[in-house]
Image (cartoon, rainbow, N blue to C red; front, side, top):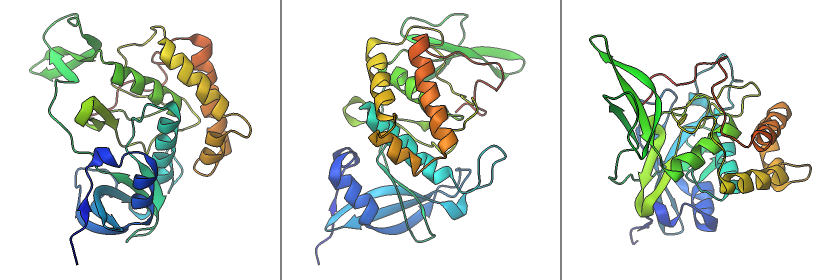
Length: 276
């Protein structure tokens, strides 16, 4: 029997090929990602002569959280992917909900990162240089502080809008995956879609600035897709609660009404810890 055809991640990140491979392929656990807070298993998935690397996070391995219902993180990861796809930006690797060796869980394509210019940096300055956006001051030891900045990058700006829509409570630097062909992917979306405002992110550089025309058009498309009878509304209704779905609609409406990137509310820590 011939070895399965190894599929590069970028060739199966969208479309029927990746959907069929992830949803119907045979999962084989190869190892565990030990730094993950919940069980995250590195796997290969094989189907009809094709193979890809993926991450499998079983619901059984989720740690309870005080502010999210137990056993819902996998569904939220899939919901984040569905919203990302609806934007047309393709910021989240293909993600499905399926059965696996340890029960139901989310399965997501593994993305191989590529070296490129930094997206985050610490600088010894009061203001960021051109091409960078300030996040805030960070302690660097011995009573010293440095300015934490992120790149003024259109991919990150799109992600900031997506995070505002899905109410991401944990956007860290380690969740940003630069990939081939100047693609940027974002991972770890288990703590999203809470009905309360919990936006916590490193991507505050555009806070209060007007949304781009592209972002406004995307938000208008999301509003329609989330409306009664909309395709995205039906998909999310199977993954999050009705209250959370209504809150998602309200966030889209609020962004369109304001026409600006959100600012920290002051009611919730604005930056995740640790930030990377």
